[in-house]
Image (cartoon, rainbow, N blue to C red; front, side):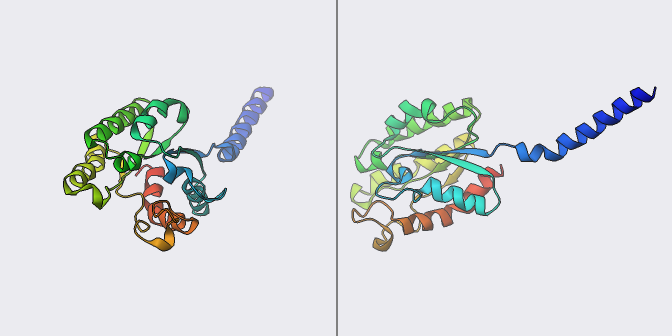
Length: 210
């Protein structure tokens, strides 16, 4: 009988020990930044891309996250759709989906852009991966009609799939020469800082599942 009590006591202590240290073994929240050159960090030094600076900002705020940069310069929504499954590994918990800028610059039919994004969102839902949809706006030189059609894509898809929408990925940076590279399109390191600061509250809510 004494041995039996001793065995139960040992099991109870062991359970308490492993329960106590379990959080230490918890894996970080896995995020993939899936996009084009704006995500990839075109023209920037190592450590200066949006995913890298966002990961640092989230960690500074107490979030145990790791962000994989799956940005490909020049990528369109068609290209993104074709590489989605192998660019977003199993175990990913959140995808920041940022595509459409190159489609817009090429004047691609907004209906096709929406179709491609729709298929990506459907696939990620099928894989039970949450999405933060980063929106884009059309350049004024493409005309009012194109801008109206393009601008409706992201809110409509966010509502359809019930995903978090960050309306404009370049918010606070677009049109500011001090925060853009000489090409006038891609953010500088300081521009990335601005983008991260503006997007951080939205990303934090997505990480927390709110």
